[in-house]
Length: 132
Image (cartoon, rainbow, N blue to C red; front, side, top):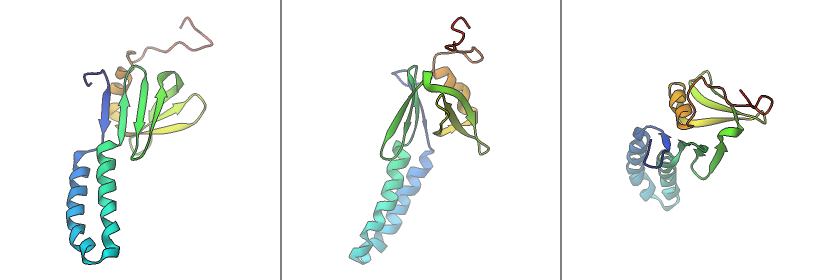
């Protein structure tokens, strides 16, 4: 966890390195003709995505970060944490919708739950049974 009590999940830094190499590789092609210059935007976008995208978790909830935006989900809105067949972590919300957690694998789920401040295996009180 960071100094602020936030657990950060990010994609591999190898993606960022690959974006830099792709940018340098596309540079000669992009400078050959003026209309090829926009090709440089692809590795730049991949590099920014690799640097920015991921999931942050703290006691308040999770924050899903993407290339251009982010979404904050409070722990009270989360009904279930699970993983899909590929091993990617997914949250099912109380309204029935789902959201994939970028850069969080199935093996990271215990750490994600620990970031909530609630121990594993301890059920959360539900509105139907406030004493549980």
